[in-house]
Image (cartoon, rainbow, N blue to C red):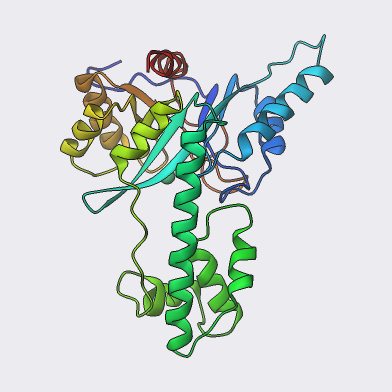
Amino acid sequence: MTGGHPPARGGRIELHAHTHFSDGTLSPAELVTLAAERGLTALAITDHDSVEGVPHAFAAADALRTVRTGEDATLPEVVAGIEISSTLEGNDLHVLGYFLDWRSEVLGARLERFREERRARARQILQRLASLGVPVEEEEVFAAAGPGVVGRPHIANALLRAGHVPTIDVAFQRYLGTRGSAFVPRPAFPSGEAVRVIREAGGAAVLAHPAAITTRLVEQLAEAGLAGIEVWHPQHGMATQRRWYEVARTLGLVPSGGSDFHGPHRGVGLGEMPVPERALADLRARAKAA
Ligand SMILES: [Zn+2]
Ligand SMILES: [Zn+2]
């Protein structure tokens, strides 16, 4: 081990995984089963702006435990989590929460407000599209989002299906991107508030895949009560890993990470990022201390 190299080993825990309650392809039960097959010891359910998949994952883990009594099988500990889409000084930052009380009323009310703001924004975009002569059905867009948060990808798909654009990319270029003619900015969920809401729900907040943002923003969030930084993430090359590992050490934050799993055959496999198992224990301790 050379100096400054993040001492990552493992692939026994998965701290960043999405279910079909956001944009993942698997159900919580399928995700838990896959984690068990892979011999993972922990699986955090971190859907975008939703904790709806969490109780399903707990139930699935319980069912698996009952079935496997007496067998020498590893069963994953399910960790209640979330990934909140937030904004800080014009940067879109994702804030992960771990060990939070998914029944928390503070959390539930804030997420519901966010969902309603997102629905209002989607309706505004649809009005603009109609006035531009490229209407799409509101019901179709909202049905496609299902229990998840409605967003521009759902509208892009509807534009494609209606034959208004040849590709999703064109839908964003012409209409939905920041320079598109139907663009409406996303409602703001300030990153500092995301950190506070996660803490109020008894959780530990971790900045997801910070990539190339400035260290100053992370310092700001550390002051708001951030517990950790995602160091190991598929978007991070070695230099980025090293950078955030050092920042975590300097600021006294937990170096964490995960595969950002969205389904089989999409990116890195479940539990395949080399995240040290210690990250889980350290985040648990931070959640308790909050
Ligand atoms: Zn993310
Ligand atoms: Zn994610």
